[in-house]
Length: 99
Image (cartoon, rainbow, N blue to C red; front, top):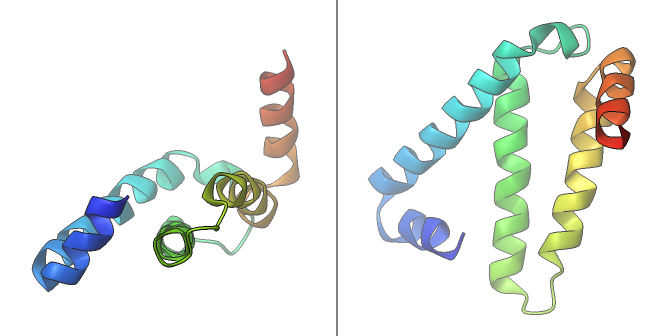
């Protein structure tokens, strides 16, 4: 994570490349799971918002030595699931995690 943020600061081009790669990967994930997304949410929007939230955790971690990034990532997973994923898909995920 530190390398990623440092590269964004050192070169706008490398930062744009990193951002593009992250967006593309999450876009593939959400596009492959489009039936599990809540109505009116596009895979593109979900990917952009996910990357933005991850970047926020990274930036807070870099600028605050006491920032608990691990806890924030755990909270972020729950937030993304409840915000983006249909309830029936959440039930499938919960069952898979328990079983």
